[in-house]
Length: 161
Image 1: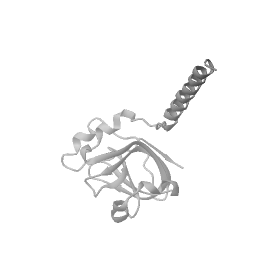
Image 2: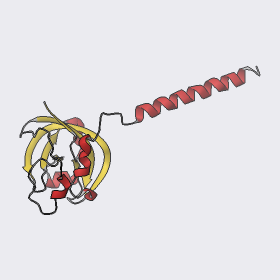
Image 3: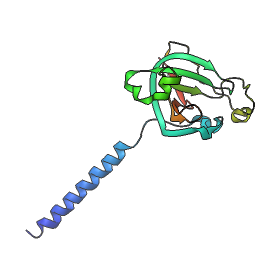
Image 4: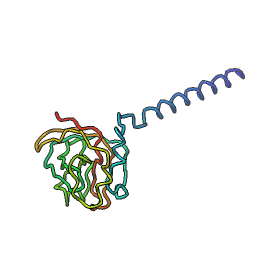
């Protein structure tokens, strides 16, 4: 009986280690997310963005595509139902309930002071059209300079389906 207790304790401890390791590996964000060409280093006024999650994927239909003076495309995305929790009250009030998706450094810059953000960088992502169904991946942020509405900013990948 005395030998059984240490062996049993060792088995229980080993099992706990295996369970803990499995939990750790499966609870991490393992989605494919990288910052190609260090896109994030080209965000104009990045201090206004409060990063909630470093990598998020969402999909939906494009409601509008706006050209911004800072060289970005501002896309309003009507989210598919499984991503509806990504928007907040500010999105409802100021963005027609849509998630804002920003493709940075894709246009000529006309806003004073914004030129340096895109210096030596031009985005090559395909720009979607209104009513396109798209899937985007990038940092999920709150834009503190715009009422704390939720955005994916900048977009790392975009697929039109």
